Every structure is written in structure tokens, then in C-alpha cells.
Amino acid sequence: MSRGGRLDVVLVELFPEHSRSRIGALVKDGHARVDGVVVTRPSHKVPPGAVVELDVPEAVPVGVVAQDLPIHIVYEDADVAVIDKAPGLVVHPGAGHADGTLVNALLHHLDDLSGIGGELRPGIVHRLDRGTSGLIVVAKNDQAHRHLAAQFADHSAGREYLALVVGRPPALSGTIRSFLARHPRDRVRFASADDGRLAVTHWSVERTWGTVVLVRCRLETGRTHQIRVHLSEHGLPLLGDPLYGRARPPASIRDLVDPDRPLLHAEVLHFEHPDGRRLRFHAPCPADFQAVLAVLDA
Image 1 (cartoon, one colour):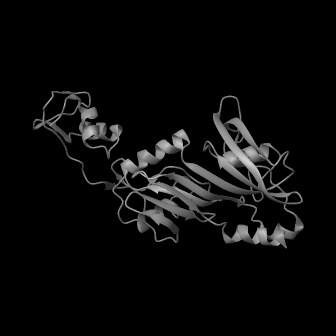
Image 2: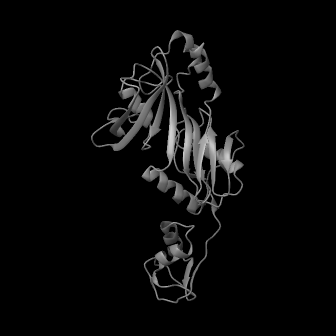
Image 3: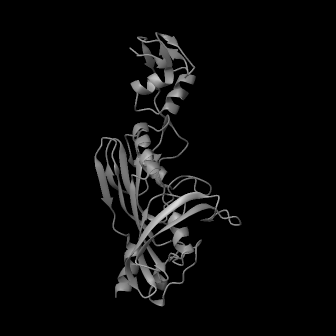
């Protein structure tokens, strides 16, 4: 029985695994009853002591095909999965990439998805660019999705990247803070602009080989192309980045650097699991990145 109040608020308290927007949609679709009577207004006032019921239909398949693509699942339980994404793999279907994406692969490999927002799909909380390798976490249900999304919004989830750049850093560490928006002339790119969204990157030098530098970047925010824009705008373009800087690699590694694969790797990821545990993951650089580092060391 209910203590009374707005119907959508009452239902969120009774069914915390669903978001308020999801509850509201279910109410409007006729899935809620108060004392046996169907109610379709989320704002309906429920009297104290009323019997409130909610029918949650099975999640429906989305129009994305499950594909048996090779992916590296680092960790998995009933709520989340952590993937070490290979470079070149697009995260989500979109223009030019209708299939062959990480989401297509997850629909095949994760057999206990309960759905996000009523759809049978993995919840992509944050993304990696196609060329970027490394760790990404996905949610398997609404409650996990909300829990993770809140951490990325308030910056309590942590991400650290390794970037191989060309240039001479002005110091051994620093912080880059700017506002990022789409480039005014090239809509594929992003750039610092007064009317953009705040982006903060903390960086430090890991190793140097002349003008080639391995930089560690810790994200305080997570804007599109954030590290690539910030480093290139500060004279440190990534090797292999076709959009920002086109850094010319030294002759010793020129044949190893793919001009369409920015040497950027999401090495560390940590967050609070929906059950309260603090989880931390580390993924070594993939083979192409390692090969470049090996030649530089030699």
C-alpha cells in the first residue's frame, strides 16, 4: 500500500530499478493501476493507503542486429560489463556504421540484458572514438545505467588515457581548461570556443623520446574529442590523428603509425558499482601501440 502522493513519484519509490521518465512512459501507456483502476496521468494524486500496481512489459528488441564479433570482456556481472575496446571498432551504430559496432557485438555476447528504457539493448554510458582503444563500461539495466550516468555527470567516475604525441611540453604536468564546441567551418571537428561546454583535462608526462612524448591524461569532464583537441591546441598533436594536427612521426616509427588511428588508449577506468563496491580496471596498450613504444625504446 502507498503512503500517497504523485503517482509517478510513488511508483519510483516502489520500483527504484526504473527511472522516473520510464515510469511516466509506462503510466501514459496504461500500465499503472490505483486500487484496481487504470490511471494514465503520472501526476495523478494517490491517496494514502491506496493499492498501487505497475505492469512492466518485457523489453522489446531494438532494430540492431546481434553480431558475433570478437570483443574482450574484462569484467561482467548482472548489472555491468567492462570492455577493452580494440582500435577501429565503432561503439554505436550510426551514419556510415549501421552494423559491425560494439553494440552489435554486445547484443550477441551479453545474454542477460534486462533492457534500458524498455528496449533490449546495452546502456552506453560513455563512448570512445573509433580509433581510440581501451576500457568502456556498459549498463545492463535501467538502475545500473542511472547509477553510472550520475557518476560520469558528477565526475566521480575516473578515466585515465595514454596519448603518444609530438612536441615539447611546457612542463612535466598541467591542466587544460577550455570550452569545446563544434568547429565553425568543419562540423566533424571540435575546437575551443566561448559558447562551448566546459572541458577539463589533467595531463602529465610519462616518458619522452626527443620530440615524441607519452602523456597521461586524466579526464575531469568527457567531451567529444576532448583529449585530441586539448593536446593539439597546446602544440602536442597525437600521432596518427587525421583530424587534429597531422603530427609527422619520426622515420623510425613512420611505418608503424596508422594515419587513421590516433595513438590514444583508455588505460584506467574506475567507478562505483550499483551495489556500492568501488571497481578499478587497467588495460595494457594494444599491440599496435606497444609496437611503437618498443621501437622508440630501442
